Length: 605
Image 1 (cartoon, rainbow, N blue to C red):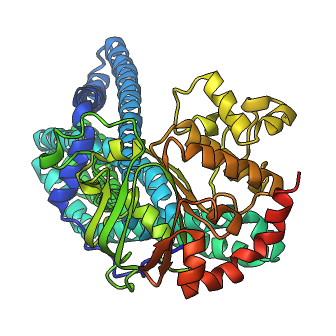
Image 2 (cartoon, rainbow, N blue to C red):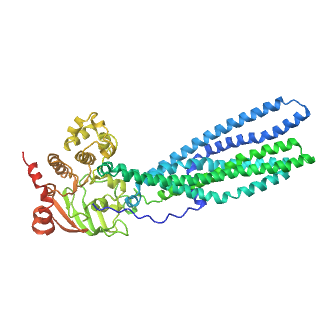
Image 3 (cartoon, rainbow, N blue to C red):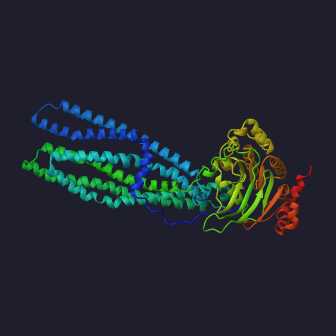
């Protein structure tokens, strides 16, 4: 089978501009604007009750100095504290719930997009990294939705309100406070970009962990049989260490950002205490005013912290949005027909499909050599056609082009006389049953696997295909019958059983075109004979294309297409090709005839 190699890693993509990041973020939060507004309003209400407390404390101190009663003021302060706490708690819940909804919608959107990726895009990507973008990266949207957006708004309004009240109390002390805070806070401009850089590298490393684990569990038996557990563990650990280092770097710069806020307020407190004490001593301001101002000074910590958290969360979320955007920009398939054919494919005939390749050229990537060099053949509807040839001849690529996993670079691939690019993609694939070379079986039950391509099949249809593929005996032995789990990638089934499940799944779809890529390579002689009969029966009502190496399968074909080095060198029957084509004669005398004893055994009563 010819496959595309993994693309080499290039330089990292350019960082998206701030405007683009906010545009993408707004697209995620737009459906949730009412909930975000409600949460922000509640948070702002909690902050407003806090702003009233220092003023109430000022009045309390003044009344104590004058000997007036303070009971009502204490009750008022208590009510303000309770109301502010309740508003904060409710607002936090609304925002967190909304953030989870944003994450859910982002995951749904990204998964839908990734499942429509073109195979070329998948070949260039790591499955583990794509999974990380769906899981880890979307999770970071939670922080940027609540903290970066709402905290920035409420923090700014609260900061403005606090500074306004401080100005009313004592403009001189406010000037001292702002001078110290601005001096210390300017360091944030140096710290925040480092947070984004460290976070993005940590997220990339999480994707590398997923990639390493997907590789490990995808070949678990091979790893154990090769004694490679320490090496694979080392590869996962290296990625985990890189994620740890990125997380530590991000935590370091976040701690610097937050500690600078505390430092600024503490230094401002000392400055205000010194200047304010002098002003009280000189009679310029009162002690109650100084106490209220100091309370507001400490109250500044919350809105400033919110703004710093919002900026840090933005850097974290921007890194996640950049990675999600990269995934969303990968090329996807479309199920729409070309305009010229839009009205022509409304009805599909129930007869077997015809197939033709007209001077087809194809390569998996521009930097790879061509796989097809003008492939040309025609297959009428019905019957069985076998594709044979040395490894790397481009046989499996024929099936990939028919399914439009890839598009030909030149020439035309025709189904029913229509270029596959003019078919609506979903309609084209609904006509085809495809059994891949490795016959994948998905985690789940046997029933779920059989119905995967034909969810509407009846119990009678399932029973019929089980009998045709010799799976009825397996079902009878399983503890839960069709509802027995088959394990990860069908690990609880043998190789031959997985192939039969894949064939049954394709037959249950009742396709007009059946593609079998070495679909009987792991079957024993008895089951292979039964499957050959099943395929021969299917060939009476559908068009069957087979990539095969066994002589017993090839000789059943109505026609044989011999491929070599990306070209069709001969087409004919087995007898014709043995006599006329030296390559086929050599293959038949060596590779194919290696199965002759099994073939003879198959024909023994």
